[in-house]
Length: 603
Image (tube, rainbow, N blue to C red; front, side, top):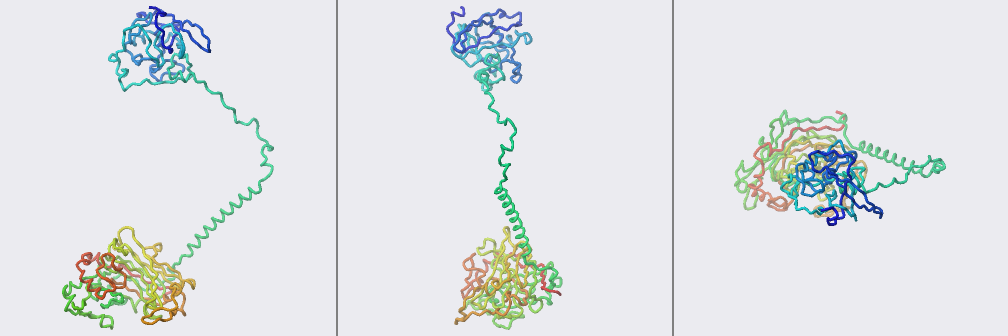
């Protein structure tokens, strides 16, 4: 059957021209050249070309690896073959009859042409409307050629990587540079890239000649407004920097501090001599000290003693001394060595019918009254707070002589106050410490200036902290551990900063049953009055009270401040609140490591 007898092929096909030189193995039966006429249409012109075609050229100059192909070594990549088995040596051909060439393996085809004795093949790609003379395998992705052969494609005979059902193989595409549509190494991918023509370069933006001054009119005339705006901006920036520096300088120099050279040591207590009578006195009574406190302050060494070079102020239970029943009925408790002339503050008799009880807690309170006092100076106490519900540790100062009158006219300085309740207590527990100034022209017009500091982890009962007060005629500062952690920091450098003006008192006020005119008790003193007199130091642990330090209905408080039976209710709840008190004295006691006092001025 001749080429003219074959049915018309599909439009896409490839025809090959016989190279000028071809070396084939003598044993091959495909030595005879075959002439093929292909009709090619280009620019609406038709012409006939005659080619000497040999199937061996399909494998000519085939690169050993995909990366070895180059524009100088124009050999077809694996993706340019119609069938994947053509790239794998040893696979049989699919039975395609080729004129003048017998069936053989692809490895035979590779061996039957010489690598040195041929030149690059010119393969012609036809994409549309070509009248071929013979069907042949194409290098683009067309359909199988029509042949009068019964041979079929048998996948089981192929190598694993080339079987159609294998998921491990996919034909790669290698677009080669500088390959036109007639390149023998071109694939369908290379065909598209080969046909695309590069665009001509765009117009150059380079100027033809160097610009002259005439081309730059801004060089002829100076921009006065632009220069002025630049200098104005620069000057404003410099002024801003200078202002910031001045603000920092004045801020640093404006901090009120006491120079060490201006201080004279009054007391340096390290407890090496015990609770020295030269420095300390004990307050012994059960009257509540004006706050309705529930403890008895004693002179017993069980409640105030030295241990490991530290002062322990230790609260204990009265029931451990006299029994729980005696607290509520039929027992008279007399305070030994009572330090007050008020008999009601030195003795009590329990009576169940009137709900009068013996104070359920024993504690201690020491002071430096008449021994160590200062008017302006510095106080520094290193201490560890106690733990336990309703404990009230305090480090504070009272006037040596109430020059302006009874409390609160002569003032009160609270360097430290705290609560022994845990951190979840709703009114600031052991994780808070507080300082305050208390003053006023009468009891009903009490003014408090206070502040606090909080620790974010744990509480002040877990370790020692330093509580400091710095005080002169211009300022009062109270802090914990650092001046940066100031709880109260006020100045009295102007008249409007005086304590009388800070109180903003009315012209008249109720004093007992009468309405009286409010007078300034510090009128003839300086702006720092009433805090311009000698004050002494007090250290104590109170328990409970009706002054409002422990707010009602907060933290399961077992009593109410306004109740006449407040202490009785507190004593009844002893099993509850005493369970929160640690058994170890190291944790229950208010521990004082050192106390230092300086006065302002030369020694």
